[in-house]
Amino acid sequence: MSETPRAGLRDATRLLHTGTPTLKGGAGPVNIPVVRTSTVRFENTAAYADLHHRRVAGERVASYGRHGLDTHQALEEAVTDLERGHRAFLAPSGLSAITLVLLSLLSPGDHALVSDSVYSPVRRVDQTLLQRLGIRLEYFSPQANDLAERITPHTKLVYLESPSSLLYELLDLPRLAAIARARGVPVAVDNTWSGGWFHKPLTLGANLSIQAATKYIAGHSDVMQGIVVVDSPELARRLATTHEALGLTVGADDAYLALRGLRTLGVRLAQHQRHATEVAQWLQGQRQVARVFYPALPDDPGHALWRRDFSGASGLVSFAFAQASEAQANAFVDALRYFGIGASWGGYESLVLRAAPERLQEHSLWQASGLAGHPVVRLHIGLEDPADLIADLAQAFARVA
Ligand SMILES: Cc1ncc(COP(=O)(O)O)c(C=O)c1O
Image (cartoon, rainbow, N blue to C red; front, side, top):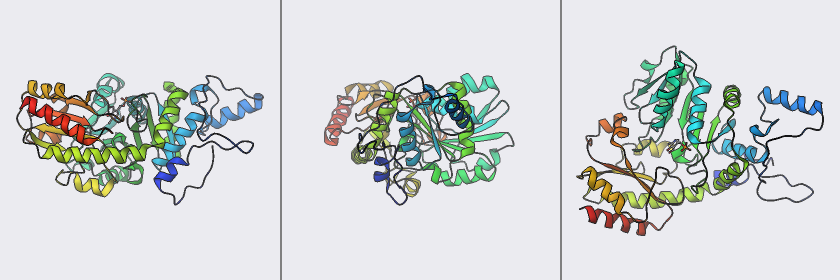
């Protein structure tokens, strides 16, 4: 991999000049090749022993295909640089990246504090796996201002997601991270919403940044992948052993697709932001809408934190109906022509999904919103012309009016 100097460069330049192949014999491809292999061959036993020992000591070298070769390494380097971290670990999905972090840092008897508006499958990992291992997750309201009192000698992790899933609740990461760090507790943040482009948790006090690369990094709805970036050699060692024990690995073709997506992350997100802002502002003017959730809107409760800690907003916009039954909300979703009904987001295309009331109920922000009983719809605003998307939303509102 090339070692181009990066200090002083801006993100758009860094992203294109990290993880690129070195020229051999005076020439070479722009893109790193897809290096598919299960097996690494060695020149002699000394070379094998050397690589093996370096890997066990914590260096990022591959002595077996599962560790990932050049394509994986290029992706890891690029995301590590994007997130301003020390080292990255790839996982076969965003959820497995989250589980990797939880299992790396928590042991039987340990306690972790989790913001209550996290991606809700985290709670399933808790209920189906961590509780069996004697690990206790406690969900706290990020607005309650009581993190310090909740930390005990058994607390080994603070796990956050900002903005949160479904309602995009903004967390005061520097404040929460300072409280945890002062007590020696590492902080992990799910940074999928920003793609690592609009937000750098590791520069604001977090120790681990997790992304479902499935979303904005890959960006084309054709890859499942997760990435964890850590801020220190000590955390890298802890993650490396669990990563190895779980046998987590990613195919070289998928690593290639994620890296290809990453090269255009900035331009795609800038466009998602433009379109989503236009749609969010339009939604605010609709009488069928009680509230729009999008942190770039000046009257969003998280707007000030968003302005302080983020350089942009993604394509996710949710809204609560002013007055609609469950059946009417479903009819609205079914009436949309250019929004696919889908559980994912982060690709180039627009998607829509009803937010399940029981998922919303997990968020203290929702409980305090006074909107209980109002159906919520989540939109992912894609790269289509926003005028067409707005026309589509307008006809769907008209149908259920
Ligand atoms: C915020 C967030 N984190 C993590 C994930 C999990 O990613 P994956 O679907 O790749 O497991 C998702 C998926 O929707 C997500 O929205």
